[in-house]
Length: 147
Image 1 (cartoon, helix red, strand yellow):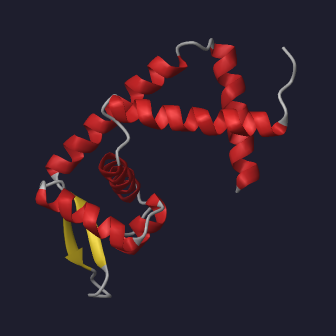
Image 2 (cartoon, rainbow, N blue to C red):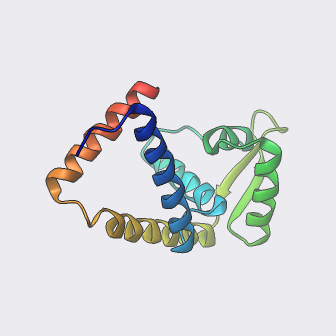
């Protein structure tokens, strides 16, 4: 097989990203809501282990998720109405809204994680262990280069 040009590699990576996102949604995973719940669950774990001092604010969460705070506010309102999260004023800055998972939200986050893990297993099943290690090394190297 002839080596692909840089442009071709980038097109293939973009296409793969779109296909993964679409199929993941179809498999019951990666929606905006499930991603937010997963981020909150991971942050909760970091707090329990002493790596994070307090619950995330809406602004911090928007930055991590990569969407505008206003768009996140709409999504959080839906998650709050569904009983997945609670929002409260910050202790030092009452204007800062802190976001925390409810028990139902933790259950939903775990369900989304289970879907994502199953999807990852199915997607990567075409690779043997050596290919998975090689892919992981390449992805880590590219992520480091991108900062």
